[in-house]
Image (cartoon, rainbow, N blue to C red; front, side, top):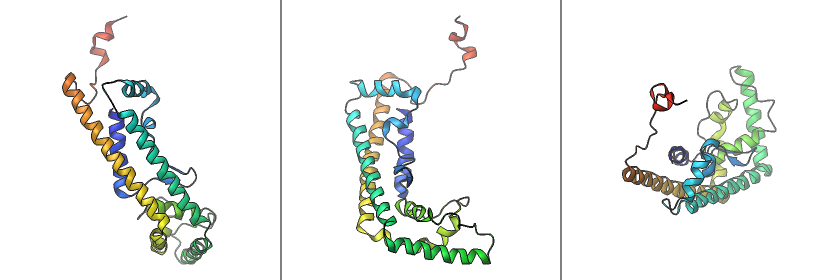
Length: 214
């Protein structure tokens, strides 16, 4: 349960910020995953036992609800971004902003040169809009571009298609938050019933009984 709880906490933090971590190239959310993918391969048997055990009723259905909601978010985000990319108005606006940026670059050599990415820049802008990015990390090539021109693209977040993205993200946030709360409560219940700690017990094998078993 611990990997799921920790991962859902990170997921909720992203959703609180409105950042879906959606990526244009994969059409998927990079850091918001189906529930099973929050476990390592070595943890999968424990995960399978958890969902099959009658002591944990209803969680299989809750996990499936989360994954369906996530898939809906990814689909709606993809539809919004694809429509932007197909829009002549959007393409022209990115092109005009890039030309202004390149003009500034000539005057200020500290700006990264984006001449090599005119084809990928519209996709980067669409991705930022989906994820409601306010500030990009400084090491991103498009950091300065987005800092200067992000307000020019806010009008696209007023479209009905973007409102659909926000609505789907809100539904996912609700599902995720309730699942997290129920997992935390269930873990506390099991820990109390079986008198075990929620955190794993770290054992120094050099001093354990098992270390002397040949």
